[in-house]
Image 1: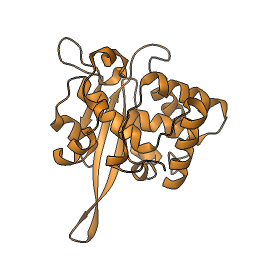
Image 2: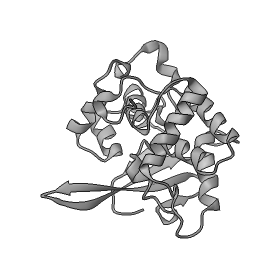
Image 3: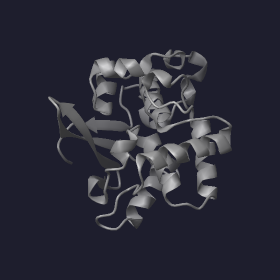
Length: 215
């Protein structure tokens, strides 16, 4: 059975695995499958959040990409939208971050009111499972990417508060994503995490997050 929720996730995804999946996704020549993978890799967002992203929610400049994420929060029986904006700095150089550049290419091809991934969450779950099985012989769901983002950030010096802010959830909810052994820091794998989450000697990083109602 495919893992769907927090306690079902027992492993994380590494960059070399993500690249193998992307190579396979690109070979399929299907527009939305590479977009799904790159979106998960960059944002760690829920499938339901990705399904709501439209072109107007994305802003691209020479230095950074901003992506507005909307989460429906339930309080007292009512759902209200909670918005946050992810600000991802663009690395310099050709194909410095192929995942981000592929996402930007998709953005440039979108029509004004078009969705980033005009597909259902069940479609996303099915396609991610297919990608992982065919390219890696493993079963990964979109939830694996969300867990992996927490792991990448934790290994690169982010606090629980910073990770919770990035994810748009409470610290208590974030801790549930750090329950399994892969989230304990393994020194032999420290350098395998993706670049945008790494801090330099001054404590700076390539990724910023701004909790807001817009850009």
